[in-house]
Length: 271
Image 1 (cartoon, helix red, strand yellow):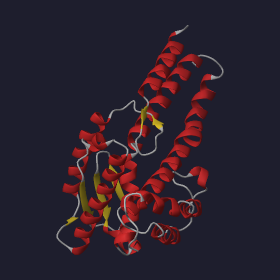
Image 2 (cartoon, helix red, strand yellow):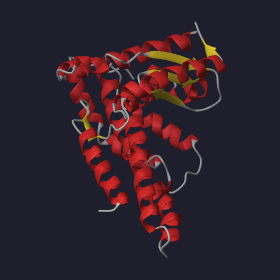
Image 3 (cartoon, rainbow, N blue to C red):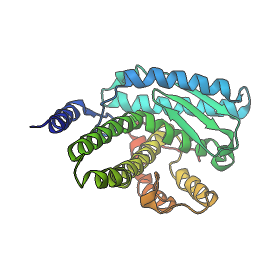
Image 4 (cartoon, rainbow, N blue to C red):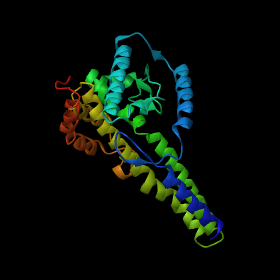
């Protein structure tokens, strides 16, 4: 067996051994990059971002971001406790910041560092709408999507290097190099990105419901986002599901989210 093939085989064995089961989904995910590597980098980058941004503190909106964020985190802890996974979040360091910006955006870094841009608040409208956004972003962190994306990138790089090396000097070498990047983007990176968005939508719906917010609010929020977003690229070229695909999927998950919340004693939901 030549050297490139040996490298690929060994790497595939490493992939199999590096998969971890996520307690929220029960599914195995790639973990070639550990959270012990990601979290310190995430925490440092978050602090640098806050230093370079205008962080809004002490206002009613800033307090709302902090309070809703804590409620979502507590919902995640309740969920984990019900499955016997209380220690899963021990390395998370929850922090919530409202940043003054016209951007209609929010994000959560690995390890629980969350930022909400003030530009999204007109679309969230109230606490329940904000819970939709924060539930979604927190879910990305809880589902280890950054870890999986980093691991996925390593795999495609190694396979690409192996293929390029194996075919170098042949008539197929240049063709492989040209199509591999496009193929992995359309066939791997973008589909997985859309899958991660859908997973975050669905877990976020459950977390906001456990926190006492009506998951039906998510449908109205994404309808507003869809209307405000303008013309989007075709879904297969996008990192996110189309607005209508996302809304249709959420409509089918609302009752499931409410049923999950009832298991935790939540019977009334704030709109």
